[in-house]
Length: 123
Image (cartoon, rainbow, N blue to C red; front, side, top):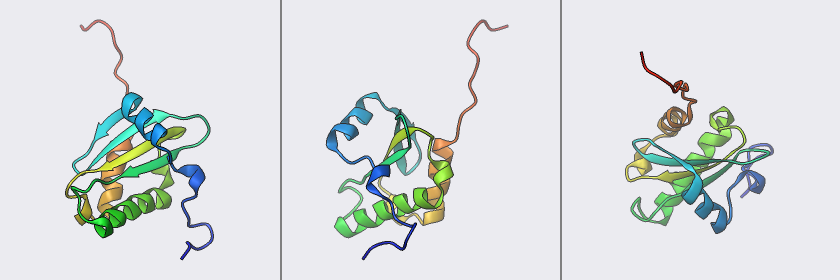
């Protein structure tokens, strides 16, 4: 079964090969939420998403459901993607019980731009 026209998650916007996942693990910036860890690294061109769900979360059906929900969150809300970055979302235990809206809220909070603090002398 395929997604309706315009509602898919094409291969061009996915982190797909092991080498890319490992590179993100080594050099990516880590951000933590209660149920997710997000690795981000600049990527020229467009944003791409990878999802990792371990067996700690549950069986194959549960893990695939969590992956589908995370991809759907980014498909429905592309404004939450960091522009020109590769992202890997790693699900933590408890993520399997989250509804789509809560997934969107947690990932939005993690990926929200943070104000930069000027470095220098303090008064």
